[in-house]
Image (tube, rainbow, N blue to C red):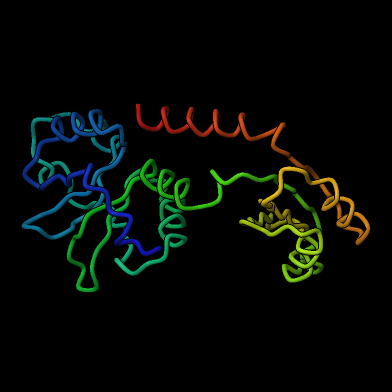
Length: 220
């Protein structure tokens, strides 16, 4: 999915002539802690709530309050992974999206991204989860997929976590079966370490409740 497809119309940009007080009011109403700022239609940077609160005279316009603003953004053709990485890198709640000539197209938010991922990914699909732990040198998705498919199952999604101070990786698999016993036994026969597993009775209701709670928290 491209960044252009992630633009939300719910978050308008500020302009350089808006005041600090207006910026704080919009952030409060929109439930975000950052907003893009435009000057004569051009993107000049991202304003944070904390930066505004550091200023004394909030009745002043943004161009008087700030000489410079950070400019995190992605281009419209950026992959959703790049969007996520940029948001994590800069620790921002809103990310501007520009075209190839750096014209401002819109922005996306953490809440909107999570909603898109949840609705287009495998989170809502019925299935179970297996977490494997292994040395990074032993990781082979081809072999993992072969083991899963040998049990008449298939992988709906996978996620790999690693640490810079360890050679171990953790591979999380979402599988299209709610009964995982045979898949787990096969992994163990191949000397895989099954760190955790979650079957329908254990996880589906709890995962849905946690997801709904997270969405409500981010929205309100």
